[in-house]
Image (cartoon, rainbow, N blue to C red; front, side, top):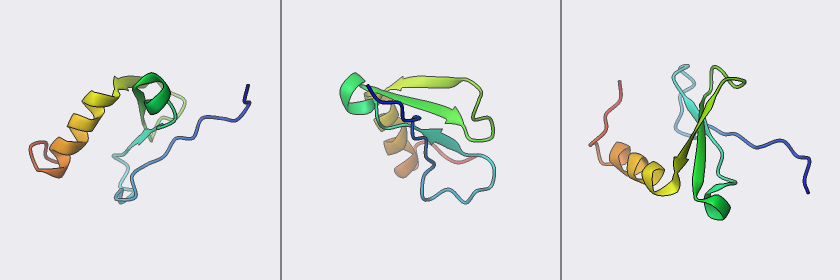
Length: 69
């Protein structure tokens, strides 16, 4: 059993403008889940998204189907 805190991280493409999300990748392989939270509220709630849905979201952002706001 590990006592390490979960490692949350932002994309290296984040310009630190305050509108970022953070993710944890440690549950992707073992549980098929990607926890996501608002970087401005690290003690707030986190959404847990299936890996296939998160991958589709990232692909949509990369190819322009999902734009920036």
